[in-house]
Length: 270
Image (cartoon, rainbow, N blue to C red; front, side, top):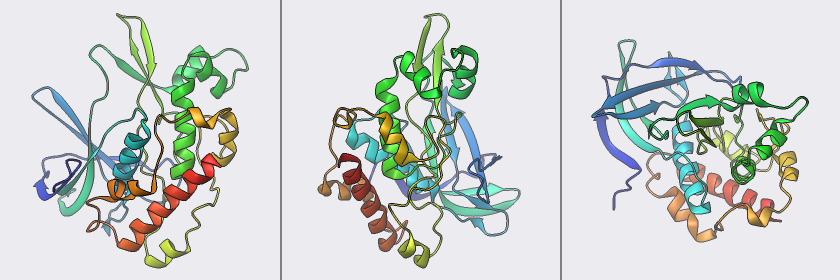
């Protein structure tokens, strides 16, 4: 049975033009993004970590699909991704790789702004990033974000990776669905040894716009963790989260990812 969020037959996407986006986490490499609009439908594409000599060397796009599935199970509003096996062209060089595709999540009439910019204009004197979001009435999504970022160890939740959607005509403001979870899990692991040696509970330094640089410490911002998620993660959800990825990542890698997700989820609930 084919997974609707994975296209394994190679697609010719050589028409896409890629722009270079430096990795905001400070690690080496470049992330490339592109977009297309067909029949008034905007689609956005992004690659895993790209090296001009070695080609695509990362697996951040796979992490996006895994996080997408996890958030669906937990009942968290988020941007959905599709993992596509594609042939692409970058500076007259051709590559076969898996990439991510997503649709525009804005409603008609909405514009988006990064949360750090929105905070800069609208915050009260001395108001923390967290308190500002609570004052806006966004407590539920912010708490879900903090919990999810701990479970998958998201290292890149800076102020531009949280967005605010505004409709000037209707005078509405709302937080965008959660997106951009590629720099999570074991994204830095490139070899079997690095996967084996990876400490799934290590509290790595993260770029968090809200709270501290520790995803573990940020859990203290949530008073009642039992009310954050609509649904529970269960051991039998492993098959749903990893389905169809067996020939994309190694079994050892996938098993370690699930071990990390489920055990950090258990620790979150402890």
